[in-house]
Image (cartoon, rainbow, N blue to C red; front, side):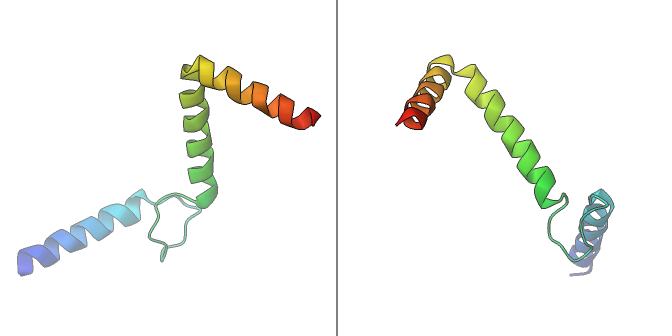
Length: 68
């Protein structure tokens, strides 16, 4: 029981040290919402740029939808 408590305390301390300065101490997340959005948006662009057929198709459909 004591070792588990020590491990939990060490984990909590590591998470607290790893937190971004823009995140509150009570938040379970280590980075802010906007940082998560930026990273996921960047990731999605990289994934889409690797699939050229899907990229061209989605842009083409977007242009067609804008004209109608």
